[in-house]
Length: 304
Image 1 (cartoon, rainbow, N blue to C red):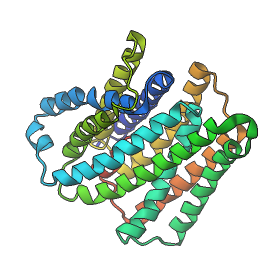
Image 2 (spheres, one colour):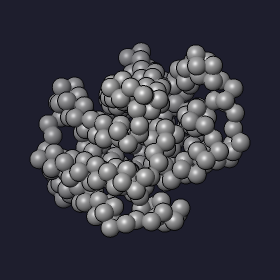
Image 3 (tube, rainbow, N blue to C red):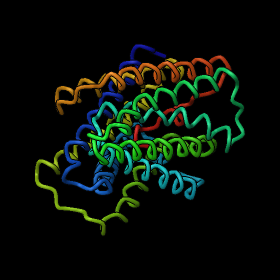
């Protein structure tokens, strides 16, 4: 174990995921969300296969006992990714990032409803606190008539994405009982690429060279980030690494301001603090209760 190396890998992965989201956002005015999902997924596959070959894990990484389970996971994940990518074209990057953290909060709720996991008092409080943080961020968007319907749709799409991601997380908790982390990562990229092709009749475009480079870059950065994320759990415990997920909010604030001229609102900052507090409380409580956060369970992209 090397906690500092694990931390460095985790922060690098989180940073690259935010870069990936920024590249998707930069192309959102030109490219439909379904097409962006295809590029993000398809161009990550060679990176993942190369990594598995390097580690001599191709055989285990491609072996599966539950192909239907991967298909269901892919359907939830690709829908979540598509909704999240569409929201990036309608809302500032920091707000999409912050609202996306409704997913781990909703996961606690769905895990109780679907898997029968018990929600004790501390986690109930944390879930309520997290939902308050989400409301703080989204209310100005829903209540400001000057922002128009685009911002409202953006909020709705982010919350839909978070809900679908939470369902995907719950499904993965069952899937990883018999499947390896490598299989979960690879088959998600594969099923996402295939399923996203179903959106091609709905307005796909031929991107110009710059836009194509942005989309391919999103896929490459996403694939590399996935590898760094997985590798980080080889060097440090998941409970130690979990809080570093929230560095994505800081990265999104910096990139949103410097690249897209997006100035964070007071409600976004306050809501971020509340959501981070709630997430930290859930992580702490799970550690107290001995809840396992294995690599496959923690190894989830921000898009599903």
